[in-house]
Image 1: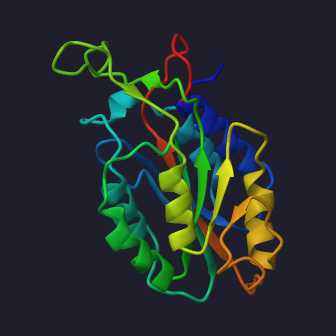
Image 2: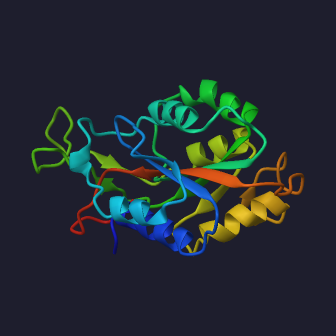
Length: 219
């Protein structure tokens, strides 16, 4: 069974195989978030970069959605004329409430979230930079578990859509379905059926940077 990170990589690679003329960027996130690749039509660079992603790329473990959304806003331009999507692939577990202040800003700029959950309810350990895993004050392994509620709420707040990535998901088809108003899934009523594609599209992909070991179940 692939890890969370490997699962995210497979989803993105499957999307890139079908996209044409859509600018795509990459912003990995954990306890911190940064633009790995700015929006571009060069899919080959993105494919190569996806293969190098590792928890070791990050100085801090965890899941900071506030930092992730802040970086997403910086990654997109100020224009609002094109269809723009922020694809977030995560198990969704978060105690961070700062996203509620940033979600309206995404919606104001026409950036809709496609939230894709990966993982299982049993959870998975979080790798630490020393080769061990994250542990609590008592030395017990810290598990990050599948928790889609946050992702559902974020997608709804931006007029986007939530998808369960543990079943088959074709992200390229989902983007077209949202743009033409025919999306299936946990579709947010304020957006579905109300928008058609009128120009070029751009999207930023967010991938989890934790748990890349096959020894543990994916989240």
